[in-house]
Amino acid sequence: MSASTMNRVSEKELEDARRAVAALGNSLTPSMLEQTTALYAGLHDLEPPDDVAIIRDRVYGADERHRIDLFKSVSAASDTALLFVHGGGFVAGDKRKPGSPFYENIGIWAARNGFVGATMTYRLAPASPWPAGADDVVAAAAWLADNGSAYGIQNIILFGQSAGAAHVATAIALQEQKLASRGVVGAVLLSGVYDLTIANPNAVSKAYYGEDASLYAARSSQSALVAAKLPMLVGMAEYDPVHFQRQSMGLIQAISAARKVLPPLVQLLGHNHLSGVLHLGLPDDQLGLAIRLFAAGLKA
Image (cartoon, rainbow, N blue to C red):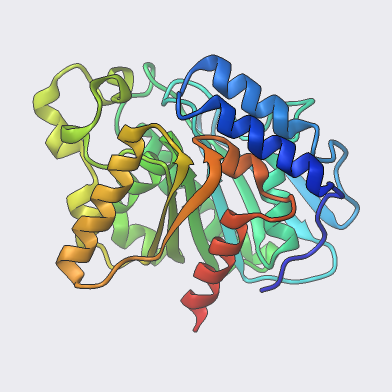
């Protein structure tokens, strides 16, 4: 797979964004998220591109949030879908915000780089606690498997960021065999939470995982991920909060100790908890390169 059309952004604009992200540090606050989003929003085209066909709001379940968007190159076929699961602290977020390029930038990037892009919305806590988000990932993958032939889809790579990574991880932990039977061939886990027992208490969403900390070990995904056969790319950002880095490093170390080999991994230099996924579709994209290499390895 090779990179295709990117937005026309100058090196100075990218450098200005990198400096601004570095200045924000590794905090995870509403202000940081708002400023990071504003930094990158102006670097992306807001109008849909002519080279990507977008099919919005396909329904994959009974809830009003069970919606999925598809992004397909108008000139190149692909047999692999990249299904993105957004973050939002388990209580917020959506696949698309009108008037914003996010997260359509991810679907567009995917369509331009050898995939069929897919972005999904899922149920939120507290109305839908654990493991609702993971169940929705499985349901969306099943919908892609059942309906993907119309788009040429045969294989699916799951891609979750933050809470989305936690949902993907839990989906693998609880339903790996079902995912594999529906064509899921790999997963990208970026800045997620996998071991609730070592997590910063403030990073554990009690609205989603529950108030009872005695349940956290059983609701953690790390031990199942270590035993999983599904290939995984594990990622984190240079300016991720330390407790998110601890989660990623803990998973990497556990897999390495059990398998005697490191899993595929990526550290996004110059990025914070959010900026890595917002950068997708712009030049000098570390995450996009890592995903393309990971996907190519699955076919090797």
